[in-house]
Image (cartoon, rainbow, N blue to C red; front, side, top):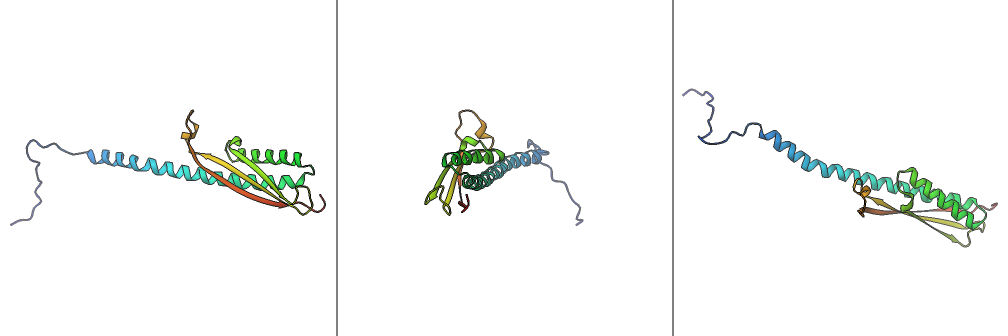
Length: 150
């Protein structure tokens, strides 16, 4: 008995499936890769928001302790937060700042705490009008000591 390869013929009336594997592969690849790519974009957006919140809180605390009057210190800290958040590509209106001082804001040796909350939107979907696509709210707190010779 010779062992020669014999090509199997499809039964009569059966359709040929030549070329359909590439179509199935492309369909499944797109179906699986799009959500993975969007997940990566979302994680990157959240990480960027965390960096923006940390930088904004740090700058707000540093700027606050440099001013002698409390009202001007609050305004300068708000400007610092808006600038830091905008530099990282986020909407400055999405950030909120709260300042607490112990014992008093202008007392030498006092600890000034700046707390920043930033609302991070989902990438791509967040830019659509009328869609509330908040991914998360990230927060950061920084503190600075008021100098003795302020």
